Image (tube, rainbow, N blue to C red; front, side):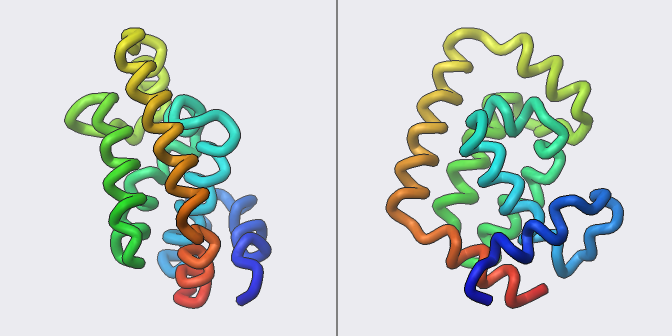
Length: 132
C-alpha cells in the first residue's frame, strides 16, 4: 500500500466498536498522529481519540517503533500511573494539570515532532496497513 492514510481514512470514520482487531493498530496510530499534530498530547488526551492511546503504544511496539511507544508512554505517565480510558476522567485530569506537568507535555510534543521528522512514521503505518 503506497498511501497508508487512504486506508486510515476508510476506517477512521467508523464507530470504534466497528473497527476490526486487524485494523485497530492502524486506526490507533493514525489517530495518535493526527491528534498530536493538531493539538499535541494535550489535544490527544483531552479528546475521545485518547481512548486509543494504549492500542497505539502496543501497535508501535509490535511494529518495531519502540521509540514512539516509549515517548507516548512517558506522556501518558503525566496523567498518573494508570492512564484512564474514560474520556471524562481524562478531561478532569487534563484540566487539573499543574503548569509543570503542562510544561512536560509541551516538551514531549517537541520530542514527538523531532521523532516524526527523523523517522518515517508513514512506513510504520504502511506496515500496519499490510497486516490488516
